[in-house]
Length: 307
Image (cartoon, rainbow, N blue to C red):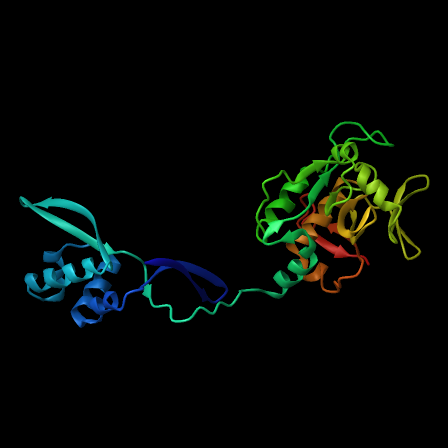
């Protein structure tokens, strides 16, 4: 018998349980007898043995044995343990599954929410045949690049990667690269998700020159967008655009002025995608976000969209 999963909703909670699909009609016949069905229901509460079932149901023990054997042959119940009681062996039985069913249709309906649809659309270039197609690029933790800085936001890639695991599988190759590795291998011509801004990630620094909303230096780093300037450390920029090194590829950048801003970008994308992607189209996409500390513990736990 093939095993499937039943999803059930009660209020705002969801539950799942396994169901064994019956492939032979005769298997179902064993459960259609009223007494057999009562036995199945009792065994569904807890494992039991024939004499105990006979007493509970008020039926002769031989009848119970007859139906137990039919249910066992059909694979609907199974022996789960043996126990000695008053010198005799008691065989305890239990259902072989939480539920049984018949699959009469090959039609399948994917369960998707609006946020799932938006996220799949946002990342669709990065998923090929259900497998991640690209690289997640983080800044090197060693001093490097034109600003001789070390990255403090590379570990946020773990949060993003676990989130992406809900939409696709890992390829056989390693998907996380340091910016220094990408440069050394001349490997910019691929789909890339860049973690961190131009200060700590050399690939983000080079991409920055091609962006409409960008990071700028003028007596200090800032993000400039539509005539406005943003200097807060918890401000971040989310960009999706064509890869300037290969227009057939795509780049997503999640970058802050400081590591708090990068964290805000990833928090927004993984926990507030409905809000963040509400105006998403498949053209170049820019979102400026600021981190909020609503519970006052000194850590970003919410976001505000600035533009």
